[in-house]
Picture 1 (cartoon, rainbow, N blue to C red):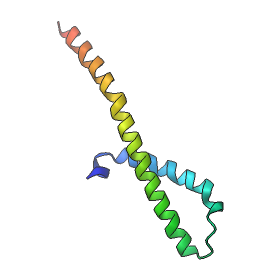
Picture 2: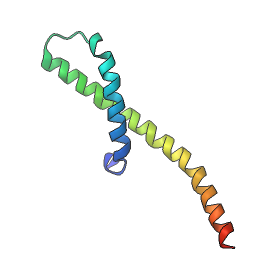
Picture 3: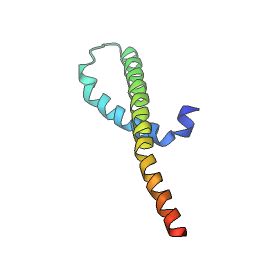
Length: 79
């Protein structure tokens, strides 16, 4: 339910987290490819979830003053 309503944030955050993961990939020293894949998948999933929530809350923080100003101007223009 959380991802469905905020899919654009998760889409963007997954791109950011995969780019960061690409930079830290050489420092993950695991020889078994399937274990390395699993570790990278979990890291990517956690970072995407964290970044998506940061984006979601920062958008809601920025959106509320804009909506108040917009509603105020709409009320003034109606009068």
